[in-house]
Image 1: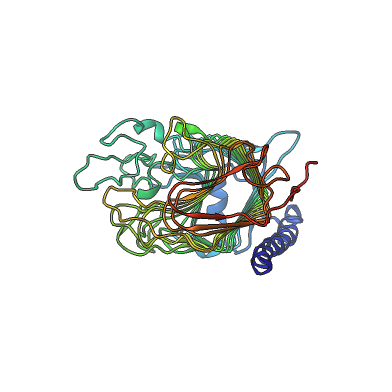
Image 2 (image 1 turned 90 degrees about the horizontal axis):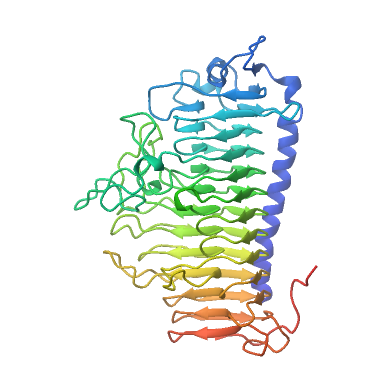
Length: 504
């Protein structure tokens, strides 16, 4: 146990160190930005640019700061990836945009609103490193409010991202099968249509495997070493999304955000880390996915940290790590070695924290779930059918019988679940339904009359040194219980007679 605890602690310390480092960088980069800014934007002019895009297009020196004064800003364009603010390496001044800081300011209760009505995005960053977006309101986009792709060392801090993903409304319920759908448009034998079209008629539309969610509120695609910090993400289809279609998505920190009430068109997760089938590495939102190959190995979503977030009332899971199948055979997606720590995860429509593998050779190994408060979440009909399915706090699902042309999923290995407080769930922890082994220790499993741990697979859940809601251990009066339904094993002794996380 000591070795596993050390591993979990190592993940946690790394998250703290990255957060502190980024906080210092924020002070250095942004604290004096008013004094060093050389470009300003104001709806009144007064010596400033009137549009944000005009200010971006004027930049001729790396590490420029653009200060956006309060007001409402939009744009007009007639090409794909239309945005209020486009920061792209493909622009004529693309090489000068490295290190750009776009700082929206507040004054007398007024904010800078990037109104993306009839546009694809409020902010679009493509192929430019060391960009910072701070303090903006990104709203009403057809797809993502903020999309960052193919970039390194980007910082999204203290933005409000709301009411985006509106393009789904143009197509929802149409097509065969009807939208929303996970079936890629153009799949032989179906009449599936693009569920989330481009705002510009004739544009490439969303990438195939984001077809059901329009890319959510904030989307990092093929991004590394970046920080999403202190944002309020609400009333989109989904909250914060990290994917890997164009290149690996790794070493990112999602910290201290409130990603809640993302339920548009049924909703998606608060924070989602799904691995998708690859497109060409030169693909962009403007070009669309080139060379989509559902049979190739994915780039991978790995070594990302989701720490200290509030994830409440989203339509799907609070936080999810998914090795998705794509189109058959689509069997080699990779979402491994990620950390979900210190989050408040409550009242989401599906399991509070979910790890999934959906097809053979998918890899969702070595993820760590530690020190979260999880309560009152929904269930997963893929795991336990029902209307509604029973609620789950934490779910580790390797699907042995997904069907639809997919082989049974590979078991998930190396999962660590520690120091979480789980309450008001039908299943505090559900594991299944392959030979998946999970290590569970120092948790408060407070189902009380419900299943503290349900093992629906043939593997072993080693759950020692957990508190089951009362001193008597699993199955005692007032305690949560153990459920084994498919020949698996739950090892529960020794157990704790007192909570790991006492009531405040």
